[in-house]
Length: 380
Image (cartoon, rainbow, N blue to C red; front, side, top):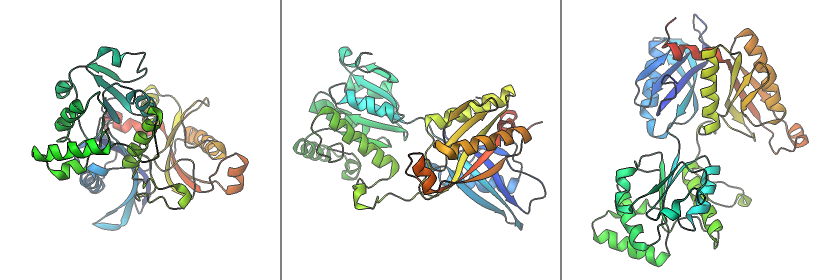
């Protein structure tokens, strides 16, 4: 991919401008989370500096966002950009291959995690037991640091066959800044473990960040139900939900600017194929939702790739709205001019298609040729 989708980088695309002497729409830069500029044809030093500073300052919580920047020396000049971050794939490491791990792995695969299962018993990590997982590792739980890396993209679930192994794993993992760390156990055993680890010198603040007993209280009893409760807690932590019933009317969700989505594997596939189409000179366009209002099937950050012959990769929600974007994409492919297209999904149209949405979406549609700048480093 020529570094286009390196881990912890963001693709920055110009989608709007005011007072500028030349047309910049569609120009791009790839900027690392540490602020280092990688490549691209967006050549405005003042803009590049401001965007790099924003990305560097928000690296820990960077999401898809739309931002407007002003030229401090010429305030009448402004540029609006789409910042599209690409994080490492979400990882779930399950320590223990027992009866809880099997349904957890299945659900995690549906949630777009790369799943790794570790056990010291080879028969408990067979391909038949865990089809589709990324890795199956047979080793002692004392050796997990030798075979695995634990970083901010990782969620870790401790469900080994015994309390001693659980504690050994927790001692190892407590020092790592993982996204989620959960350990199974009854409340009595968890409290005993907590007191033991505090006596060993582990800070209570670190233990407070561990989800133990693991899972949300949904009355789960069977392994499958327990797996659902664990997966629900992981989603809650990842998305910032409250876990309150939607029936009560309030989600309690942490507000994110522009109500955005984190990039899914399908969205990343769109960019990968767009770059490939650009390199091969194929006529195609990328549609990205940049703003939404009201109820819409997908939020800002969702992507779709439309080829001239009609083939589509990805989705921005389906229905008449997606069909309208598809038709507009053909115009963009023909005239090679990026544009923002607004779609109204009124309640009547949504209901006729069996949907429960009724909002508006603004979609930035660009020909794949705009990716040439980050392929060539901005050189002609």
